[in-house]
Image (tube, rainbow over all chains, first blue to last red; front, side, top):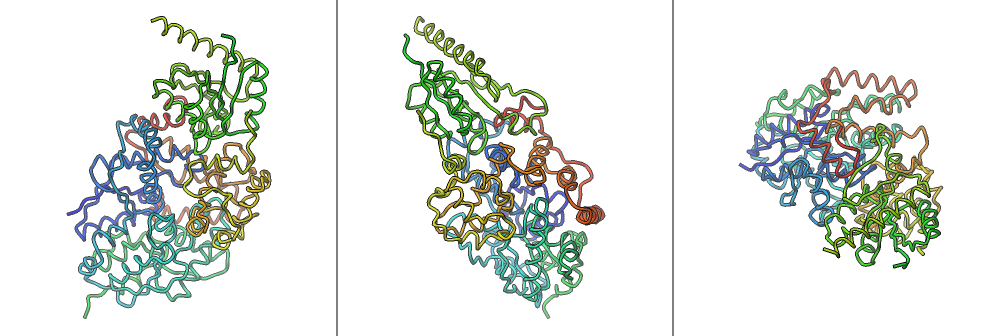
Length: 292
Length: 142
Length: 187
């Protein structure tokens, strides 16, 4: 059984509790252990970088150091946490000057980060480490005929890390296929949901959300699958506000990819946090059927 | 003995550096200025300066603190007195509910806050230089 | 002695350790502006902003709302043919504007950033109800009611925490932050 240090991030404590619950259930179902980092702190979101990048790196490094101490690679389900943690780890590995300074601060919590672990997004664990074959194997109730818009969003793919294809990634579509559903051709799948602009520049963010929802509806999607709590919140919680602002009539469910995996694996919906959403997912659940 | 003292100033704000340099040059000091922490630290390592005037918030963040720490870790550079001149309490006021900034990173540290009184600046500079000289004389004696 | 840096050099100094090419390698192709999802809301598009920086138009740059509209989607950064970290530039300008208090009173971005940073330094984790007051009062009546309605629904669905979270080792955490920015001791 492979084990990871799990960094849920602030959103998964409450706002996106269902992501946390479904992540736990599905990783467990495929034989992966997620050990929550004890006493983890906020990753700094984007706002820390607006004030002091060194402080932002320090916050992230504390989580990294605790994961390293536990001896496991760090896994983040939130794309923003993932991006911050991935790049902080990379910069600390590359820049001794920086890592000396950050480790000087970490001393105050009796920690040190030497850069010996990798940072992964939860989806990477499923796609690369567990493998799509295994997921297919565990799928007892394939979601045949369910049209899923795989919404990557931003920070799971950007900035570029290595030589990966940032213009046309396919891993989300492949994951959707592995649970028996149909990934739709979703042109806006890599477009921004507005992130924290929903707070700072509401009109702009609602416009982005409207465009995304419209594009998903135009692609005949039954559901939008997300891999980030910010995307989920903007697309789902603000869907009603979009309808009011733009006189639209959207009512498309937004689910975490782990929730879709969970129902395809026959896990009880309550354990996947289904029921805390604003837009009913009842119709989606009816697709999960044992093959005839 | 009466050669001009050489000072290095690391500060990202040209609007601040200009008048401070003028004050110090008027008082008979030779002053170099560097506007980013990397170039500043490089200059400090390669040049020979009698005193460093150091800003805090530059580049990525509190880089002045990082430079001060690096100097403290370096046996040779440690001899150079540092005068921190910062406006950080005003710049990021939301983190400083009322209290003044008074860190002590390296034993020779002195700190003044922007805006700077010219007389106070000159007094601090000359005191730090004197102290450094006395320290040096003492260590040569031993 | 030293020559006074131009505004474009000031920005370069802010980005001294950024991970892309310098701004003067910009070829003004406009890929960033064509890619940016919020370009239509900006006073100056990203391409224009870089042009203004390279032409040392300091006031015009700082007065613009462009960088506060950047949502950190990094789409421009991955597409820039000159490999300039444009999102990184926007972060730098946000820092500059916060440090210099160079933003308009009704800008929500800087206030939100400041409130967020302060709240994390206090407890170690983010807590939505603390953040709300920083922006909610700048809304019009309709937006305010919409937000209040949304918040109520979130509460009913159990998606807003009632008790603020706090780290166990919060004192160590504060001392740790203090080594990066000396805020006068953990309080």
